[in-house]
Image (cartoon, rainbow, N blue to C red; front, side, top):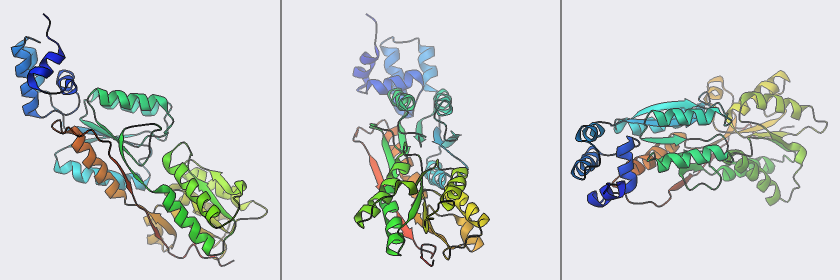
Amino acid sequence: MTTTIDDIARDTKLSSATISRVLNSSGYVKKETREKVVKSMEKLNYAPSAIARSLSMMETNIIGVVVPDINNPFFSEVIKGISSLADTHNLNMFLCDTDENHQGKELKQLRLLKEQRIRGLIITPTSENDENTAKYLSEMEKFGIPVVLIDRDIKGSTLDGVFVDNTGGAFAATNVLINEGHKRIAIISGPITSLPGRGRLEGYQKAYRSNGYQIDEELIMLGDFKFESGYYLTQKILSMQDRPTAIFCSNNLMTLGCMKALREACLKIPQDISIISFDEIEAFNILGLNISYVARPTKEMGWEAMGILLTKMDVENTNTTQRRVILPTNLVLMGSEKRMS
């Protein structure tokens, strides 16, 4: 009678998934657990002793981290948070940048990481609607590689994750602008196929509705979280006949693009136009530019995500409850929100 994985699971009182991790050398399994499985394999004649012993030596201390834009200071800070906790557990990071490209590059990076026999994965997916990425992440978990989402979600996903209150942060920023007397406020939003892009647009719209104002669709500019879109969309805003008196930029890189366009137009902040950014830009502080922003706990996001991943990598942990952390944002006013014109 042929010995199966289920036989080894019964003999060791471990899950079939854990047995699979040992056999495929995927994900993280404690040394003691691996040795227990190997002994059971030898006892039940599942594999020749030499092969079984070789399996006991296969361990990895690498975790994968996938972000859509490594040049974005936000993700650099998140990675610092991940690294600060990973270092205390002697874990190394294999960092991948998808360049906001889910049509091929994201899957390519995920396949690469799987081949590296990583112990776990932290990922910011490019799009929450990409079925291929969603399917592959689900397969990685089944293969024994735990996955934690950070900043962005996947539609219909049951994966654990760490996010921020995007809607609340955008609402607070837009509401302050309205209270300052701004009626025509343009938003440069991120892609609505992502949780942050959609959530920040919803917060902007919610602020308008709660103040009894009608939303002007002309003022909604759909960007892609990159510098270039912030630049050319601001140029489009400035060309309007009834020009807005304020702009809410949905991320730091688009704010940088927006600032370039405003400077080229010789507009002063807030004398000529007001602005609030989602995310702090440290360079502004160095240059003495007092730009108001929605702050979020970037390093804490990385630390929280790494903490969840450590728990999931622990094979002794039997808690399968979904863990989804939503951290608050904080509006920091520097004066650029004032209406002077």
